[in-house]
Image 1 (spheres, rainbow, N blue to C red):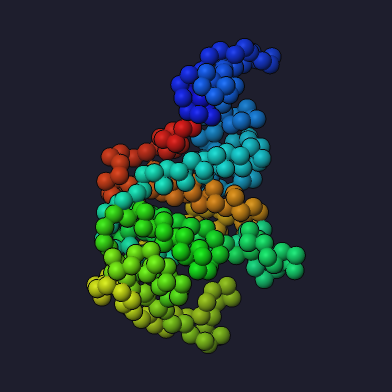
Image 2: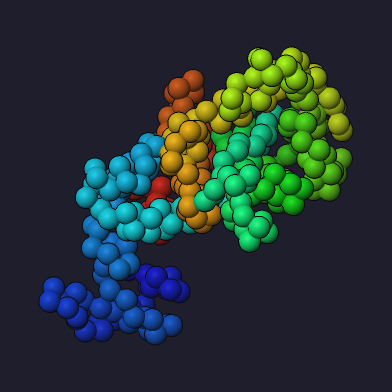
Length: 318
């Protein structure tokens, strides 16, 4: 086994502890001490590997924390620890494996959620706290392979848009056509990150101002969509955000934290980021797409088989 601190295979026995006589080890390289339990269970818990993967499977299928606790018998605090560890490792997996991917048509959109409370309910003391209130997830998807190239969780502002477009640049490997909605900060972010090395267009939607046609929790009726070339030479027929908007539905169905009109929202920003990372790691590498008959990662040539949850988490050192 490798040391969990320096990842070097140089442990030596370092005694046992507890009534169960758990074997401990000490790394010859960094002198860190650890036990076999570090590789089989979550720190400070007694959850075995089989139960751990059962918990993760429930989470990626849209089951809430409390329901997962009832189904698996694992305490809610432990489930949140598992979520944090799995989310961190899936985020690393996305960054390592989804890099320099050849793409042709990329679509981008943002999906709304909130953390702790909605933006309009914040108090004066909470007004400047960026981890309370609206939480938008920016998503970039390749139209042909349905591969989620990158994501970013933050406010719907220029700073988040710039970070997201920077991730999109790292994930893609050649010139492609990009379509976004009419969010203005995208224009400056794309120009700063890609320069002239991209074909970029926006699909600007027009909404009705008639309140009688407006749903209570939805914007007004869409009365038109105007394709607007911004830079390069985008193909008119491919100016669309249909695939990424369909992906928004998948996110709301498979992440309890984004289900509308429920009390399943995130109480902590870190838990939301972990849930989003876990969802996209599972979506890209483990979930067979209905129209592709393979996973998006297989369609993009990143992997050659369908990963299990064990494979996904094992790839990042679980």
